[in-house]
Length: 622
Image (cartoon, rainbow, N blue to C red; front, side):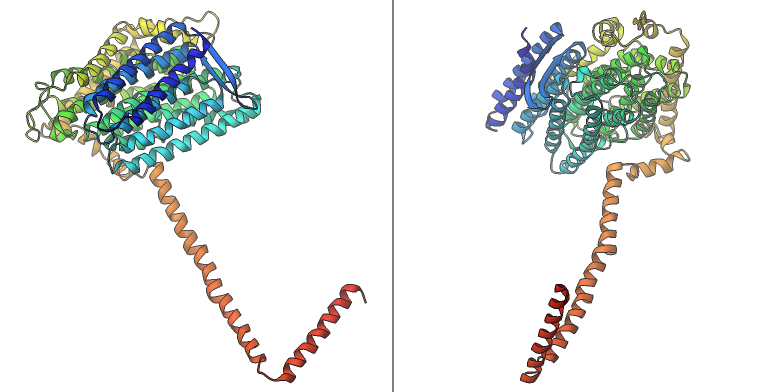
């Protein structure tokens, strides 16, 4: 395979995007067939490149060290394979779920263009090229969210501003790194995050975790869960952005900077990860809309990835990266399950649903597997990656981070017990008419993702040895053991027993809330919601007090009001009243002097000449 082949993952989806924009709206079957076949071809290309894993292509681009530099190695080929796989499944799902959308031509165009930009970001080996593809994806995300409807534009703007803030931070960090190292080639950089380089690390970290959806840059995701198409949520926040964001974060921590165990930068990552786990899952627990509940979990699970990488310990880093791909699988499956329910029932409000497992058994099965996986139930993939993160957190010696991760596990399982009970179990809701299972193109992606959750859990050696372990080559101490399966498979070690205890506690919490809520499952979280102290915090959160976007808007409004009242108005008053009054006074004086008498005018002329002569003489030195 020639190095020029690295251009195809970028050019092929970009070319297909151009074709989709040109196909007339009334032509549907051709567009959908082309989309599925095109996505299948891109997936085949992803497998082909993963089998190669070592290619580089470089050509002059903008000068001054800014080259069009692409590099394929194990990590990038792994992420590329994941991106192409999710594109195929989402495209297949979209042929049914998105069929009635009025802007279908734009949808497929932006979907494939987003994929092209994501592939470029993964393959980029020059920071400026990375920024080019990375920023382009922000624009296509904006466009895809607006497809959701008239009310989606505000959320699209919110995603653009928050994403732009994170991207700007990343650009600043790259600029500092460039100034210190003198190169923009990503594979040539490996420095300690000290002094000004520590600032570069923090700024680039913000860019990465912002893309992944970590707190506090997450607030557009729950809004988009309601406003954007569910396929967009399953593809971008749940899969693509997690893969891209955590890929870059892992490269920052492993390649560009040399992260040290319990160093300042490592602790920063662990603090951000632990806070994201706990705070987001607390918000997820109380949601009463299926998609909003999933969206907060999409944020919370990012915390496990950041925490794992922040441990700077092989088992923790591998767990964080493994959790990245696991999360992309089960979170996409969960969003697609919610989309299947919405497709048939027309709503995702938990109180209007119930008893759907008989009418939609395949969707219910897919949801159950993915929900158990994200909750960390043995022997599914989520259990394996979470256990690795738990072990890594404990090995740092800071038990508080492991406690935060376990607390997140309790509330995660409680949330999905509530969601599954509300939607698929319990009495059949009368708010929704009788339905039937969704069509095959909707169900197949859900079942495929559920099957992968089982496969990557039961046969976890397959992904760990094939995808994860090679990423850490050269990043561990000589002779370090990289077989992590012993941490994950045993149910008879203290860490695993604590995890099982967390699941039991979550079940008891759900049963308690279910009974207190009058055996209405969607009210199972009310005891937590109304708990003294938490209720006030929840009220503030629901009022968007902790939303940095909303608070930024309020600050700008307050600032503009203060500037208007405190500066603009006084200046206007000075000019409108003070200057005008002075001008009017001088005008009246001049009017009084011009009385029409020739003698007065002659006196003014003579006086002026005298003054002029005096000034000229003074300037001439006489």
